[in-house]
Amino acid sequence: MRQLFLLSLLVPAAAAQGIPRGDAIVSAFSHPAGTEGLWRVSSGGITTQILGLGLAGSAGTGVNSVQLDPIDDRVWIGGINSNGDTSGQVNWIRLSAGGTVAQFSQHGSTGLPLSIAGITFDDNGNPVVASGRASGGGGIFRIDRATGASTRIASLANGLHNAITRDDSGNLYLGIFDTVVGAGGGEIYRMAKNPDCSYRAPSLLGTVSVPQVSSVAWCRDPSGGSNDVLLVTTFGSTFEMPATGGAARIIPAIGFLNWVDLDRGANRFLMPDDGSGPSNVFSLTRDYSTAALHASLFAGTAGTLSCIDSNDDPAAELAAIPACPARDVPVTVELGVSCPPGQLAIVHIVAPVSVPLLVAPAPGHGRVFVQLPGVVVPTGFPPGSLVLQAACFDPVGNSLVVGRPVGWPAN
Image (cartoon, rainbow, N blue to C red; front, side, top):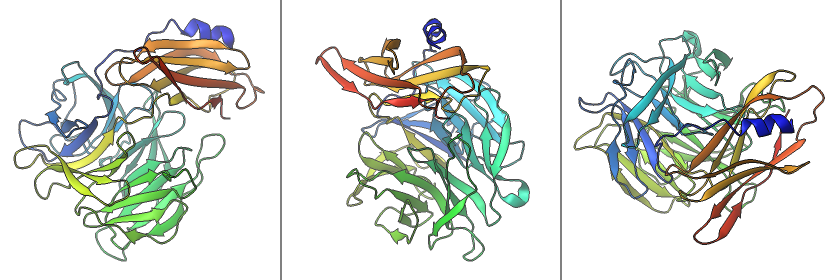
C-alpha cells in the first residue's frame, strides 16, 4: 500500500479556474438569448455570466441543477429539455481563467427524457441525482463517477423526485413535489447510508404543508449539539424540520424560492428566486432573523433560476474517494482538500506510518487534489486501517490549520 501511494504522487491534478473560494454558481433554464444558464455570484454579490457552454459541446444551454465536485475543480450540471435538449444528462464542465467554459463532458445519462432536479454525491464520489416520477421511470439515480453508467437506487410512487441533499455522514435526504395538496408531494425522506456505502430504502421523516418542495438543505447544529435541521423551500413558503424527523415549522423567509444552499463560509443561506420576477439571489442569516437581497443576475429576468451551490468547504477538510473501494483490484483513489488561496495544502497518512501524499499551493478556487491510481486494497484489510489528515499552512501568518483525521477505507 505504501509503495502504491508514493508512486501515485507523480500524477498531476488538472489546472483550471473553477469557482473562486467563497463564491457560488447559479443555474437557470428558459433563459433569454445571450445567456447560457450559468452565473457566478461573488461572496459580495457581484454577478458574472458564465458563457461558452454551447461552444464547448453541450447540446443545449438550459441547466436545471448544479453542484461543485467534492474533490476537484469540476462543476456538475443537470440537464433539462429547455434551451436545447439535455434532458436526462448529468454532465460536468471546467472553467477557464477568464470564467468561460473551457471543457465540457457529456458524462452520463439516466436514459430518460426527464429533468435532473438535483445533484449530490455519495461517499464514493458518484453523482446521485433526483429526476422525474416513478410512473415515468424516474427516481433517485447513481451515476458512476468513472464510467457514467446509471443505476436507479430508489423510487417513490407519490410525486416528483424534485430535491436531494446529503449530510456530513453521507445519508441522503429527498424532497417530493406535486401540484395538488393530497396528491402526494410535500414529503421529506431519508436514505440512510450503510457501512458499505450503499443505501437503505427511503424512510419518511415528515411533511410540509405546501406540496411543491423545491429544495432541501441539511444544516448541522451550529452549537455543535445534535439538533441538526433540514431547511425545506417550496414555491411560496420555507420550513424548518428536525433532521431526525418530526413536525415542520414555517420560518420567515423570501417566498417563491427554487433552491437553498447553506453557505458555510459566510454562515448564511443563499436562495435564488424561481424566475417569476426579477432574477435575484437572496441571503438569509443562519438564525433566520435577517433576509436581504444578495445579488441581481440580470436586467429583467435571466430565466428560471434553478439551483445554487457555494464553494464553501472548511479549511483543511479532506475528502478521500472511493470511501468504500472494491477489494483485490486496482482502484484510483482521489484526494481533495480545500485551503484559502495561496496557502499550502498538506495531506499525510498519519497512521500506522507517516507518509506524505501531497503538498501544493491552493489556487483561487481553493481546491487541491490528486489522483492515486493502482491502489489495491486486499480482502481482509480492516476498515480505517489508514488514517489520513490534511492541513493548510499560511506562509504569511506562519499559522497552521489542521483538519480532522479520516479513517480509510470505510468498508
